Length: 199
Ligand code: ATP
Image (cartoon, rainbow, N blue to C red):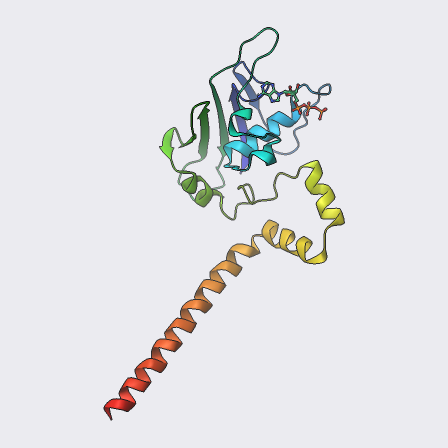
């Protein structure tokens, strides 16, 4: 799996339709200060389902929409589309190419798209869960997060590594199974009591 193409329209500094072709392996974005390099990463985070506007270096949801410049007036909508090459079927969908999309209007909430069809954020989160590229994945590490890793407590670092390794998903499943076993044991005890009373 790799990110294949990013289409941005009206997102942050990208007023015009901008298409970025990405390749497997290393892709490097070079440009002067303030030209929009980090905005590209923000666009990827956003289309993958980021809901915290602060993670996207904004204050309110509409901060992701192009808010005008000397030459261009502000836009009413931001749209980002990310094409993922899934020919190795890392993501559990029977498509060799998966397109994720997200749109937001100044007036309202985000709309999410999976292969051009409207879906819920949960559908995107479920699809990306455990793949490392989801909202909670560590595929994208910002400068601030890098400092957190270096200065963080051992436990925080362990949780981060477990998330990156995909262990957390199994830990959650294990905890759920433990809870069900406990409930069943309690039911069995109660059943035993009832049987004793009947004897
Ligand atoms: P540096 O190399 O300094 O880290 P950068 O290339 O990563 O810079 P970004 O942080 O991606 O730059 O982009 C910053 C620019 O994006 C600023 O000029 C800012 O005004 C512009 N910008 C951010 N949000 C919007 C918006 N909603 N509308 C228009 N422009 C925006």
